[in-house]
Image (cartoon, rainbow, N blue to C red; front, side, top):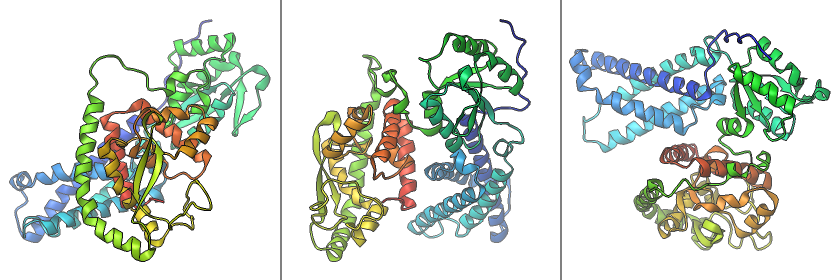
Amino acid sequence: MLFSPLPRPERLQLRISERRLLMRIGDSLAVIAAVAIALFIWTIVAKYEFSSEFLRENSVWFIILVPLWLTLASANDFYDLRLASKRGQMMQRLLLITAQQVVVYLIVFFLSPRDALPRLFILYYGVASFVLITVWRLINPALVGWATSARKVLIIGTDGGAAEMIHALKSESGGEYWMVGIIGDEHEVGDLIDEVAVIGGPSDLMNFVARERVTELILSSTRDLSGAMFSAVMDAYEHGVALIPMPVLYERLTGRVPVEHVGSNWTVVLPLDEGDGFQPYPALKRILEVSAALIGFVPFMVLLPFVALAIYIDCPGPIFYGQERVGLNGRPFRVYKFRTMIPNAEQATGAVFSDKADPRKTRVGKFLRKTRIDELPQLINILRGDMSLIGPRPERPEHVARLQAKIPFYRTRLTIRPGLTGWAQVMYGYGSTDDDALVKLQYDLYYIRHRSLMLDITILVKTVGRVLRMSGV
C-alpha cells in the first residue's frame, strides 16, 4: 500500500534529553550574566574601574560559579521536567539552590585569609542569578511550548504494558508527550485504558498518523503483534514515524526497568557480559570508593564522640548497631550503623520495614536518619569489600527470601555489590512495603544496566542534595 509523504510538524519537537540540555545551557548563560552583573556592582561599591582588564583578573569567578551552579542544580533535581513545569515548586527549589551557593561561599570566605575574597560579591551574585534564572525559566519557549510542541504518540497494544506506559507518560514526562490514543484490535475500539481511548485498529493506524501528525509509535508489546498490526506499524515506520518499545521509553522517562512487563525478554534485566576485553570501570570504581571511604573517616572520627554521647544520653544502650544483610551473589555480611532505635527494637516485631512514624526510633535517631549520619559506620563495610559506595541498598535475608518469591527478577540485584547510596535511594527514597520494594528494584535494575562513572557521579551529587535537604527517614 502506498501513502503520500507525511506532513512535517508545525513546530520543533525536542526530545526530553534535548530539553534538559537546553535548560542547562540557559542556566549557564544566566549564571555567567549574573557573575558579570555582580562584578559590575562590586566595581561601583569599591570604586574600581569596570574594564576588560578587571574582568580578566576576576575571570576565576566564571570558572567556579558555573560548575557550582550546575552541580547544586543537579543535586536538587532542578532539571527534572516535572519540577520545571510547576512554577511554584521550581521557584522554591531555585531559592534553595541559591541559599546553598551562599552557604558554600560563606564557608570558604571564613576559612580564607582576610581580604582574600570580596565580602558582598556573593550577595550581588545570588540576587542577580536568582532573578535571571527565574526570568529564563518563566519565559523559556521550549518549556512553555511557544517554540516547541509535545511529541505526538500513538500507543500500539492494550495489554498491561500499555496501562503502565500511559501512567508513566502522565506522571513523568512533564507534558512532553501528547497521547493521541491507542491502536488495538477492531473489537476494542471505544474502550478506555486509564482514560485514554482505543481509537482504532490496524487499518486506521496510518489515517491517524497522517491526520494527527504523529511522530512516534510506542509498542506496548512486540511479541503479540498480529500480522495486520505488524504491517500497519511497518507502513508508519517506512514513512518516517519512530518506533519505540515500551520498556525503552519507560526507562528513559522514569529511570526504572519495568520488570513486570518484560515478559520473556529477560535479557533487558540481566547484566550481560560485554566481552573479554579489559573493563576499567570496576577497578577504577573500587579505587575511587576506597579513597572516598578513607577520606570519609575524617568526619566520621570527628563526629564519633559527639554522636556517641548524644545516643547514650537520649537512650542508654549500644552506640553501634550491627545487622545481617545479603550482599554480592547472595553472600551474607554484617552491616554497621549508629543505633537509631531503642535497644532490642525487633524483639516483639521481628524483621519488619521501618517507616516515618516508627515509634521505635529515638529522638536522636530521627535526626541521624534525616541527615544520613547513621550510615557513616558503613565506611568500614566499604573498606572490607562487603559494600560499594554506590549500588543497591543491602536487604535483610528475611526480606530477600520473601521478595525473591514475590517479585520477578528480584535476585538480579544481587549480581553487584550493595552500596552506601544508590539510584533507587536518590530517585525514590525509603520504602516500607513490598510495593515500594518493586519500584526500588526497577531503579536498581536500571543502575545495573547502565552503570558508569558518570551515573555514579550523578548519584553522588543527588545524594549530597538529599543530605542537604535532610530527606532521610
